[in-house]
Image (cartoon, rainbow, N blue to C red; front, side, top):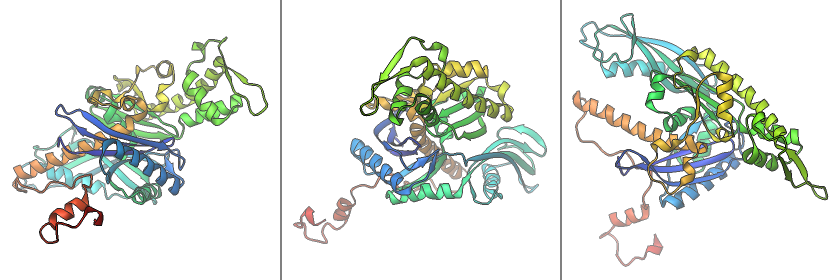
Length: 435
């Protein structure tokens, strides 16, 4: 797998980001290229303008391809938005009494049946994740493989998305001449890049504050227990600043990123920033304390909703790992302190550094790109899972030890390949310009 290349495509509200990477000999991700473009056709995680989104994807892909010197074809795509829903669903299968023990195939059969359950009209299942198993009414089992029993049950975390939202994403990917190999919920991708296994085991809540949405994923005992998407993010704070300070949209964004603080008391009441006024008007003076008050009011609203989601999940007292903030919105000054004060849980900022090897692109280490990095890591995790399943089939005599390598995620120079195959059939003096 050391030569495999994976591409992650993050279709966000504020930016379209593409990252291509490979694993080095130490298992760390090396980012070979990154491309990004302003996202004008996405609102709160949902594609609202196909043409603008396709154009942004093409621009980001082109930039990434040139940097990494590869021709990108297949991508791992993230999905988010208020339409995302999750629920816990129970399922069971019956086994023959003559069967000696529960096998991996039994577990997979149970999971496959859950993928076919009825969901509300217009929705599609995107993830089916097992929680705890029950064997012959004995519950609390993490791994039932090898146990004896005739009835296998499990609780599953089912995540669904609107079919139209999925179709629009796939349409944008296809029109950009790409192939979507996998669709992944963005907070799950972010968790791969910023959370440790110890945190997931102890209990942790990931809060990914993006431009249009705030995504939540709660883990306990290394199992995802709850997911939610809040339709509020960094853009709503920018809008509040625009209206509260009576400035332009771009000025509001600069005020937020350069001078914004999540706690008003931490701002100097005497600090003033002057911004250019409109045509033939004097500059406007903005109080940093007033700016922080606007930001804090909106952040408190978001934190209250996050707190409610944690309470509804029933895992508030199980989060020994506290809260991990990531995404572009997590870069606000004093935001972790505000979360700690309002929730009573330890809070830190999540950076994707732990999973990254040496990279010439320092920018990719920012929380803003946690989802993009996570999508690439998700692609490698899927390859690892496939290799493990294949080895199990070989061990069980269900497959041979020889197999064809999976199709590369990048198309090589097809014309060179054709020319090699035709060598000897056509004249060698045909110039490259004819190909």
